[in-house]
Image 1 (cartoon, helix red, strand yellow):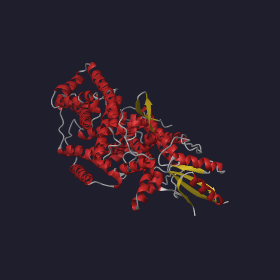
Image 2 (cartoon, helix red, strand yellow):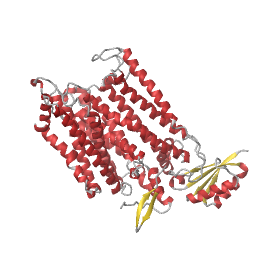
Image 3 (cartoon, rainbow over the protein chains, first blue to last red):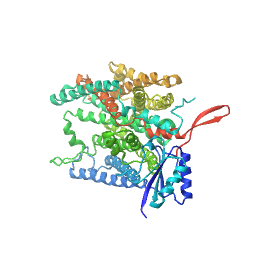
Image 4 (cartoon, chains in turn yellow, blue):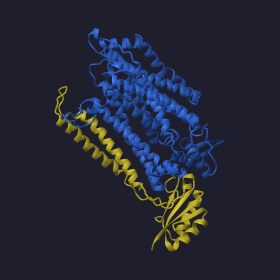
Length: 169
Length: 464
């Protein structure tokens, strides 16, 4: 069955939690909905489902890539132009360590940024149902709902104190 | 007692007021803003003209000559790298320690970092006299002759470290800005809305997105802190590794430079925050508590810096080497260096720190503004006194000794650098909120009051 998005907009967190509880009583699971808020709430405040993220893996991967590239650049350029300066070896590890360290950190940081964006499922070209009041303190419950249950979902949200309910046409 | 911010009653009133007040600088502009920006742009244009003149006429128009080939421009480079350290360090440490008073301070600190670093990186390039030639030295690119940068030189380490730090700092700021771009997207129309929509990347504010924002804040803080330490250490090695200059070849330089950078940088953040508070009417956000906390931090940082300064001097004198003693004698007792030294030590430590011990001073915007400006006057002179006297006595034979007189061009460049940083901070304030909106809102959600005996005291629940 085709699914539609239903968005309930609530004034308080208590109303939103009430709506969530009633949605569960109506047979929806916490994988069917997500909360939209304008600021971070403590984890689990709405009993939401929080899939695991893999953000911690990204900096490790980035660090390995950065380390490898930095080794190749420093050793490669030294060997390409083998000019002895100050009697030091062509491949001078203490000197290379500085650049390799920076390269490693840069790789780790850049991959962390990519990781944050990727794991946040951004960029999101199509916003879907949204309400600009969410960034003004209202709380949105975005429900993924079968076509034939849209009316039930809307009724549950209104009974729980939603100030507005929108759904896809 | 902490002065609590009363922003409204319902969550909607609180959020609407935070949005309105913190987006004021983005959505509306007062006339005085453009007057200040216009004046700063004029100074920057003058400095730009000075650079053009120097490129056209050659480095001879500066006061640099044998044996002092590093003067105001390199002093300014070290100074601005130092200033840049406050920002991300402050932001990172306060995030990791979950200090509640960090909320209004972090973004301004990060923005100071970015623009200070951008300014710093310009100076060695300008100083080279032929800026385009710096490409040969810094980038691993073969310009037809098969000559690559010498990775064994600290002068190659510098651009590597600074580029890493600058890239990381910009990314750190941008990631934390995504939720605030969404707020701006929801409050603007037309072209501005289209631009903020692209920048917000479709942010909706799901728990997963918030969770990742918080984790990213911690993770990036932890990753940037070692970079921050490395950058000023590497800048210090520009000097510390040079064996032939008295006063430079010191093992203590790396930690001494890092802590000095934090001292001047945190002071600069306080100065900037006080100016922004005045300019954008952010009395509800940058409170007496905020600068009081920064003042306490400054006492610790300044004293740690003074300890390193003391041991740097002590170690150099303890060697009883004639050349080193001669240099220190010149720094401490021979004009004009002696006057500069006195000014530096008074403004860098002995005037501000005793004043910060008084709560009334720490909670006074006027006094904190004056004292933090003093610190940076002192810290600029400190860098000058590290660089120039050593070079003036670099040669073993006395007939090669000389001193340094900055030219008008160099003075213009220094003044222009301050105008450049200030102008950029003001210009970026037209595009992004300089106080993190979502962070302030989170603080409002977690804020509480608890009753202990007969008193009610402010409290905050700690975010996970």
